[in-house]
Image 1 (cartoon, rainbow, N blue to C red):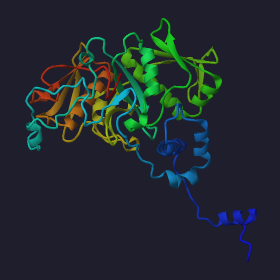
Image 2: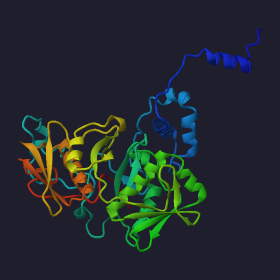
Image 3: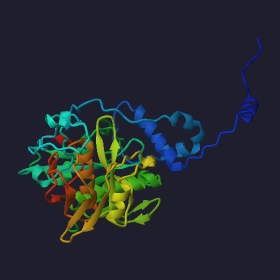
Image 4: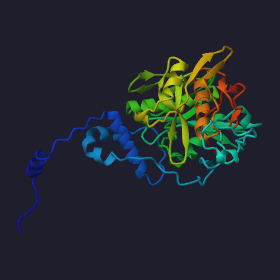
Length: 396
């Protein structure tokens, strides 16, 4: 029988006859695809966070080989409630803090409202307000990436029975308890290193070993995710993160270089869009900051294909915005409308409230709306901006 084993020269010659393959993606896109594939293959959660350097190297070195495999990367599926301390709400479940509106159910002319008028399918709010907490109520908001590591999505957990614990204890416990895949999102927590309060300056410190700091510094995407994960701390009025590496103040980041502190933007000026998974629709800040809220509201009518973000202001609505002083924003619909009491109208109102908050406003007054309410939101009076977005679970 003829020996079919190939020597090295035969293999090289074979590769020369392969058709040329051109990969036009940039390194960051490849990196995100690698992370998506890794998320789908995980059988159980590992405790690590920032994007590892070996994955970045693999993405850059083996882009052509991995390209075909990663082309079909999809979303994670939510298997059900977490069996531990977290009770996860899907969109078919009601958060305890959310109560059904007692107002009449109104709809836009021409819409199919048979179920709504019977009181069925009444949309539930996803934002957290001070009135929802009650006496002694507490919350923790984490920013969790989507499986493609393109968006950092703020999700909020109500804390029950946390008396005697400070906020940082709850935050640390939540990072260790959360199973991001149950929420249809990408694995991220807990942080490498150790968190503690930074005395006297309204912030926290992140203390890292040299090895941990090197993992964080493995790529520009990791740096971007790190900063955005800290941005949600503004919901608790924290203003600064101070970094320490092997006891020395500071950390090296690949894009920024050596920094000692990161000032948390209190008004980041984002517009809010919709990111949809199998079981959740998240209100999600877009990738860009805007110079004016008028510009943000205009962009919120558009889809951002690169980040899988859907518009939060649907057709046929067009709104304008005016600063009325005293922290109030007036949002006017171009034509007089009767908003349907449905999911789309609810998320539009919530996206506008979150955008107003990110521009520093305290309340929003909607104008040119005929009906009294959508869900729990009473539209004929000023609405306070929320404490935090996307209530997803309760921690006991």
